[in-house]
Amino acid sequence: MYATPITTVQIGKHAWVSGLTWVPLTKQRDLVGDAKVQMAKFGGTAFVVRHSAGVAQVGIAGTDGDIPRGALTLAGAVADTVAMRDFPLNGRRQRLQDWIGLFEVAQNQWFLIAVRDGAIVPNCDRIGTYHEAYDLLEQTYSVGGWTAVLGSPSIEEDAQASYHNFIPVAVEEVLGMRNNHLPKAGRYTLRAPSNPKAKLLAVAIAGLALVAAGTGYFLYQQYLDQKAAEELAALQAEMANTSQVAGAKVQIAIPHGWVNVPTPSSLIAACMADLEIPAAPGSWDLASYVCEPTGSTVRLSRHDHTNVGYLKALLPEAVVAADQNSATWTRTFQTLDSQDESLSLWAEMETPIFTRIQTANISISVGAPTPPPPPPIPQDQADKVEILPADWVERTVQVGPTPLMPETIREMFDFPGVRLTKITAREGQWTYEGTIYAK
Image (cartoon, rainbow, N blue to C red; front, side):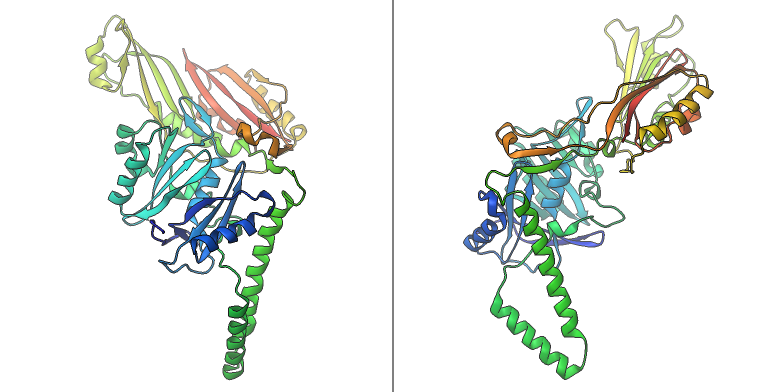
């Protein structure tokens, strides 16, 4: 019945379980009850409900492996985190609905997951050796229709040669962990079905142990049972809030747009590192330099005292134009540092920002405030979803042109919610474009 074995790995401070059988849930007003019915049908030993925009599934654990108490579903957490993030694709950032992931989770243990239309694909929640997981990746990829392949940076070179739109990212990042800990881990905890008789027997045994040993074991066990019951009640309440009234809509918060954009310091550091172009007699002139969160592009032009041979000797990766007088050199970045800081009021930021820029005698243009874009919702689910209003707005910002280089003006952008999305250099002048997120 269960083609995928249950496997447990330790990532950070949590035990994670892979190998669940994922089944769709249809009773929107009682997802937990529907999940229990499905688990009984499949003969599982534990379950977890995954409920996101337009998708409701239950992950069912079979009987072929022991599951530590408090273990979390690896596939459920990864799928939810990816669904709420923007990824760089074809020069812009976008959400993923159809993707495959291959991540190293321990020594010679690799996690394979596939998501189609936002739902975890059955039997594509698996941990195995690299060769086992990679074989399953190739089989799944051959089906077609995938927007991207996500994977550990260590396989980037091989994967980019085999798959279109490969995005290098570590498993800790797609889990959304902070300091080796997953916030709100309770929603991903596997739960065993309630068994009143077994519970009474456990209480009786614990009571005898308390009397015999004179310890606090019973009280501690009672505390653990109560905590587990509270977590289950919280999950049931969360599901009930969106379904207790017939036709009630699922409420979805707009994701923080600044979370997935590198901090100004991180982007500037990467841009300056990429600007170190090899120099030698006969090298071409730098016509322009454009740096974005996804990577950088150098445009070179030939002058009268050089030729294509010199350029290729210096930069074999450069792409020469048909006229043989210009060329481009493009490089991509690994994932840059970003953070989810608390935003400030625009009224508190406006004067300090303009003061810093104007003191350096640099021009600055800030656009009108606009509400953040809502997350993409499948058309057939639009009438079932309510997008909660955001408590912040976005403003475009452009600084320059100025002869001041990025490292010099780094501190001018040191404000919560300020993000740079494009740095351009041309004829000794720099221009900085980005977005200001503020309340």
